[in-house]
Image 1 (cartoon, rainbow, N blue to C red):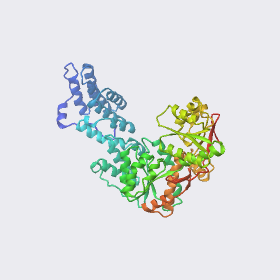
Image 2: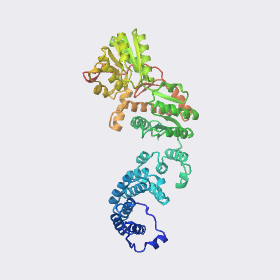
Image 3: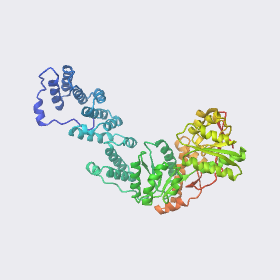
Image 4: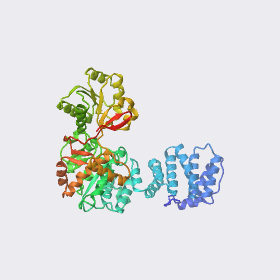
Length: 556
């Protein structure tokens, strides 16, 4: 049975009306149903269930039958027949609408709660519309929400946060958990967000105050750990966490790491910007994940003077925003330098063409490739471009073919490359294909087939690299997580290293961390030779690979 009794307490007047639950049969089941309700309110579960069954049999076409079935399920729940009650309530919730459906979902949640199935109970509660419940039922749903959420783990609670009536209850329970476990920063931020989104809710349901932050400062990792982008965010987070754990024994004044989950929601991201910016205990931010998110966060970074370093943002527009907004650049244009040098020096190409997409990264790589080829004495005989949703490249390929190139550079994604390559063959453009790490995907082999054979491209990060910082990182990553890291994990590790190196050098204010970030120069990290922003540093250690007979092999 549920940990809280949620059945409506019978009033004195109702008790007087109940009597012995005698039935006066009028032939349509209504009389039996009326007496069944009286028995239900007095806790005579077995008798109530029998009377509801009689009512359903007597009036099968009565429009009140769904309510009678729900009443019978209520009686079964009261008598301990929980699974039977759950099955019936679940069925009614699917078959009906409005008030009956809302009450059925409430009974589903109560039944699941009685069985200890907290996640499903929370889902059922979130699905019901409180406006379709009577006042007493809405209060029961509210009380049950606290009971159900109390049975979830912190991770399950975070996953339950959605834009529905249950959200303030989830935030409040999270704030309570963080307070109990001593995670004062998270507790403070969660309680602050609850107060902003739902003014007065915390004061109504929780007497506890917002806890104070830690004595030492902290660094916030701002990523969509759940929701859109979570798969990539988890890779970044694993690298950042590893770096902080390794620094714990080496940096005496290392700041605390606090993870802020934006759930891929722009409103939550901006709220985090305000909350972190106004908290003097937050020294710096690692994140956000994407270029668009970083640009949105920039307003608050600059307003509050909060140093922000994105490990994964790729747009060069971020470099022009100004102070307090930075990105880690482990590759980008430098990949194009490596490919251009190989194309001219090793492959012997002298007449090269470029086919790029209209994206910032692709355009930047095309420009860097062209500049490097010309610096080395080669020629760019034709440059063409396409929109990211294009699939027919006849016009661009025909133009390039007329220029008679001996090599073609395509700084595109693997999925774009496997559409371009067959069309190069179809239109008889016989030129060696060169690309960047966008082609470093199993899709090149799986979907590109023979058309990608001979293609050469960069592999900007590899778990088998002999580059010392990379091999050291891979060793420690495997030891902690039991699998190989991704390039995003390495970039997260490198971004965290910049922050922790600043702390090791004595940084203890936002201004000090900002100075450290802007003066970082070249960073020899897990992902290679990195910079803060688009500073060109030739990466001689960048590995190159080739597609050969359906396999990817090193060309170095």
